Image (tube, rainbow, N blue to C red; front, side, top):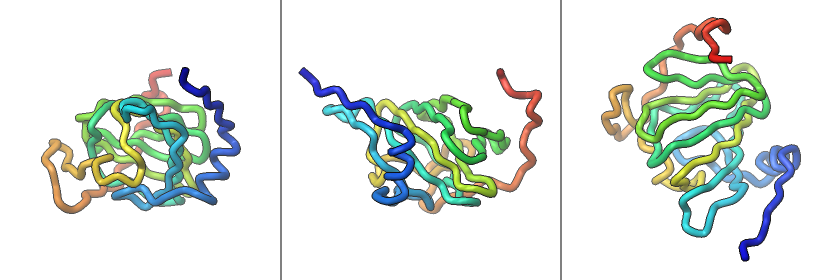
Length: 153
């Protein structure tokens, strides 16, 4: 039988600041919450410092992101969307995207399948907006965010 693991999100947020490891390819730290034995389904908390951002990238699989703290952005097709605490969004693995923090730190829960550890070079591949692989990271341009009325809910 598999051992049940219950994680306190407030405690995990503190732990990512104290014991988090550098996220490969981004100015952020992460803390694994749970990684299944086969590496297929996993989750972690990611802390992006104020004004930090992930470059345009793709993942080997789909992932769901839940904003716990701070305001940030998700950029798809070079269009910036605002993200607030409580927002949740899904990004398909093959879709180029970028994540950034606003004026304060941005804390996210990332759940993915398949899922790679935050410090793994296989976690994300740098791309341009067309999905072409790049050797160097490309950061999104500073584009205005879509108005709140464009939000799904």
